[in-house]
Image 1 (cartoon, rainbow, N blue to C red):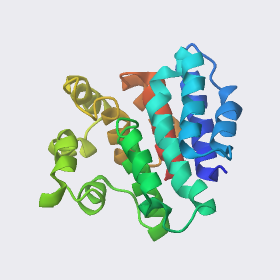
Image 2 (tube, one colour):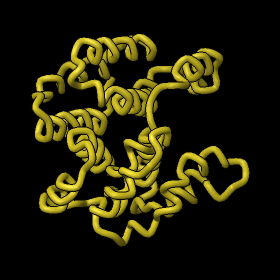
Image 3 (cartoon, rainbow, N blue to C red):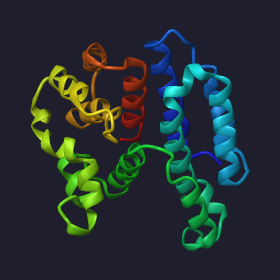
Image 4 (tube, rainbow, N blue to C red):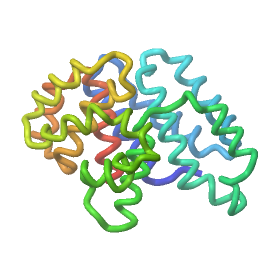
Length: 222
């Protein structure tokens, strides 16, 4: 099964990637839709996903965010055909262990956007940090550590996208938000950007094909 929002996200991601790179990724929309819609178990679908990226290194930069989409699709669609308490099972615990080093923080952000839609609230950076990630709570200090660059630069919500780009470029290479910082902050600054707004974001992007693909995924979920 494939969740409609995930299907749309794949489509807009490849359209943006194609627009801002020298590689036409649009034919892969149907290829990945087949992977997501497959009736295979989750780890087999991960292998299928990786096989496509292995065969087409031009798409490599999108591998881990597409893993995030595969995970979201599992929570939104695949889970419906499994037992109600599957996420508490030993099998799922083993899957989580096997994929511990996969994906990005985009997964948390997509889960948040789904929750916003379910509850009928507007996504916001402060709400994401404090109400969803609970970065102010003592037991969630891992999240605080990961999101420290975002917490420290919330003032960028009132700045030009060029300022977001400057901060993103200066983040340490080992920051877990290094790649996502720019598109994530641009999204929270303007969750419904016009075509002109998107052009301005693209003009200041660090890695345009990746940044704009991620931005379009986030917009499609909001």
